Image (spheres, rainbow, N blue to C red):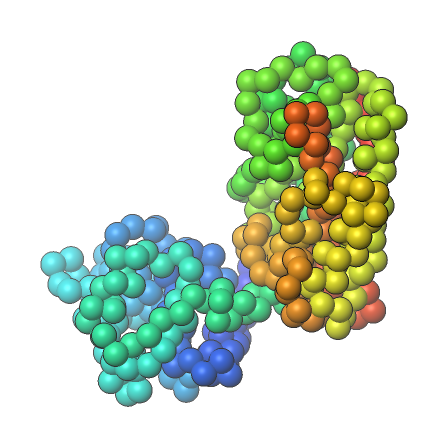
Length: 375
């Protein structure tokens, strides 16, 4: 087990807020509005309870950051983010009055703002009603790379989360599969992730036999049988940063086609990882992996993008998908996870988290990608 890393400092969060302000200005925006959720935690270190009461960070280039907060939560906010100026409001008051004067040039109520994606509709509509001359765009659409490039401390956390997921796989391959339900193995995965340091388990896919042809299968009551291919895909958050890995195992000896399909996916995943280098386009990773599967005649059965970014959430930009021409930059982290899904029969997926380095890419998952035989 690794030691708990030192928390991010007020200086770290101040630098992130300045980065957000600069990115907003470069995108022609007047500021960024951030509701409770992963963006607020990443920017400020403050994780409030998410309720119907308005909490919103207002970032504007050239202005000090201000957190609009319910008065009853102001003491918690002050302790968690002491460098932030607070603008509080009390139950019974109009919660938007505290926010509207902060928006637009000199608080004039005009301008265009990026809004964090998990902002409640009632709050966005409340701002729009009171400030009809303001405009709003999704934070992910307008500033998709805000959290995409990780610093050294973030990379360390992602590597530790990946190592914990790897340790989980090494243990799960030792447990019995045959004769147990998918939900039983999923519960084992969740327990192991927590044992190896995860504070939050986001998903534990156990897709056996024909269920493996559904990439996002929810573990169910199906009893795993000898002869089943089983897709395992699991991850969550450790010290605030995500893990996500997939391996496909077989209960007993596989037949020739099952081995062949697994070998094709393994080769595709290898080519996708080899395509990772600074300056390559995100879509190049997808193309490299997909070409292997297409050439083998299974292109119609690879039904999703090759990868997604990961950080304080397990899915975030950038995305490794056709049409995404954004160049890879050192510090970006994302999955490379091609798959083949044969309806009514079985599926195969292999996934690693990869970070872009100065001269290529580095996998944060290191467990065997060979077809593992389980009991």
